[in-house]
Image 1 (cartoon, one colour):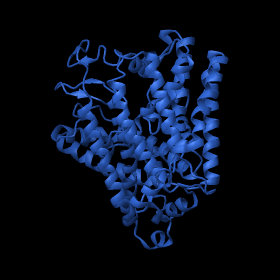
Image 2 (tube, helix red, strand yellow):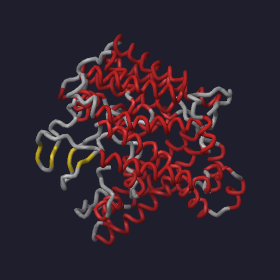
Image 3 (tube, helix red, strand yellow):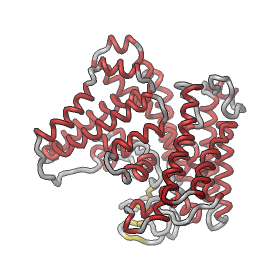
Image 4 (cartoon, rainbow, N blue to C red):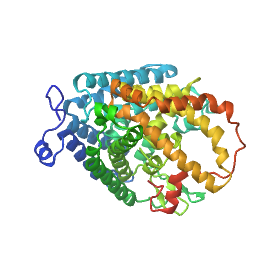
Length: 492
């Protein structure tokens, strides 16, 4: 796909095929790169197994293939894939460990912000493949690594949380280790975020050691085979791609900017349309993220143990839990299921460390990391408001519905509907990107859910006394019930 300047971003070798199948060249390049990564990831698990290849060879293989895929998709823009981590590595090895982590985060965000601004100026609103996507993942990697190194070099064990102890790094990575971690091909294009210690365990062949097996902890003798999980995820990814391609053109998000939609449709229709349109947009992310999960699993990354029925789980590194998100009965459940690597990153570097208003700080960093389209900031600031409001409602209202299973089911159904109306209401600016058209639509909708959230935040604690916690609860809500009743496995 060409930018506004008409200069191709990546390889044009497939441009003829792309025209014949009705895809933009950059989109086809992405698909080809991901399927190539899926095939090449088998080599990681077989020919380059830790028992057959040295760690240096495994590091180099992931790095070289990652750079080749980056060049294929982005052309000379792929220099940024090396530029950002290079600057951060210089800061990491030259600065005092007490301040190094903050400086690396600042440098990475500044570099990424320049790329975001460049895209806004020269390719505003484009849906094409852009180098900013991989750089967002690399920003997560370099910053999480340096925060973990900061913890390992400057903190005593007792001063760290359990999460910080798990991720703490006590030795600065060498150049090969560092760049192979940043650019390893299974996750370079679409994630998921893989923390450094998990990556090193994978490279050295320690991923399966002392994995919980049933109710006991024992060393894994026969390594689990990911093929079943990989096939399942590829099928899910292709299904999501079909849904996105087939149905989104019938419900384009661009329609919410049209005067006829804003002026001549009812409130109920607006909510319905926003819900359908934003749901279909999510299938694009489901495709890319589930495919990336499959690539990681096929390389041997992501094994997290065994379920009670002895089935293998491959969800240690994962971008999304589709079922939990689509059937979430609270904003918290939805957020936890969406872009899970980013959630873990934000929790590690912001939420657990900021004193005072960590939720607001987390949403602001997430907005900055995404870029500078004004729609992002409308979504994330609204998200903070609704997060606070939903917490208050849950604390003061939920236990009134814990008297019976019927009441609990009613509560789940109500909160399911409300959650998804809220998600559509606050995320459409994220998709449309624009500030003015979003404000116009909010005005026509009388800011109804914003006002409702503010009312709930202020008045629910005053007028609805908290009840004693009940035992009748279901952590997974509707999604967990569906998992128990149907073929969808929590493994994925």
